[in-house]
Image (cartoon, rainbow, N blue to C red):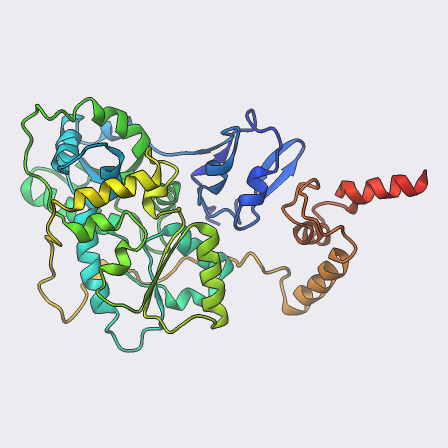
Length: 419
């Protein structure tokens, strides 16, 4: 059985057992046991909320290093558009792209360029007969994993379009093989410069039957310091930018939605907000929409925990930078069909986290036991038991993972009564 390879890990030596991460985890994947946090790998969606909120930096993102690219003869950088928002007073994307060549890459292929092609094909996808609406964007891997684990009934709504990162990786490889026929596919290494751990997990695990074409994922925070030393306005830079406002706009929440040129859309960012939206979609309590864009990070990809700049500052920088760009530099030739290599066929299969038993009858019995037990608990969701809520604590008891003695408040009341 394939185990999901996560990119968000815990450093027990730094964990004090506080309940901060416990209260921010959107899938209740964290418990406090033996004085430190424990992450349930089956529930974790690699959203990075525990990294963002941990006051002791005990949670960390695990990603590749630039040294990992040394095994390849030809090295290609895929900069996420978020990267451009990390630098102050940047008025030309070419400084960043040229800087990537200076730090050792042989070529650069902008993810924002691929984003413009994905936007064009998404507009065509929305016109296809028979698709279930609202169509939910497939660009954020955290949102897709969340749907699979917690909202499986919405899987049919997911856009079957590969994310710009994957499209960019494929096009970059094709370009390299065409320009350098002496190279084999194994000689070429593709490195995605990412703002979030969700993309790292996506690359490590693949996507159902699809294997990622990215070889290494590095952090924007790592590349940032390397680039700073090479991005001098005194350098003579090459004209490399091949994307426009639409592509770079994908870095911020709403950028993907506005690129479909349709008013019937919704864009939500921040993990709690997208959970509320998915709840409403599942319950049918949402206006008639054609497209929904979901970004787990606040502000969109600019809010990723592997980025450097404050997401609001990065967004402002990108808005300023876009003034110097055309609307788009990439267009599709044929608007009658979507090429197969832009699409994926099947979604990953995950066991829904709200499934209690192996059968409906067993699940119903367990649910009744949980509700009955919850009614006897204090109901203040203090987290002292090591679970994020009294309801989660009751579920842990029914599943045999802990005992009622774990509730310190009830234990204290019993001691008071005994005395």
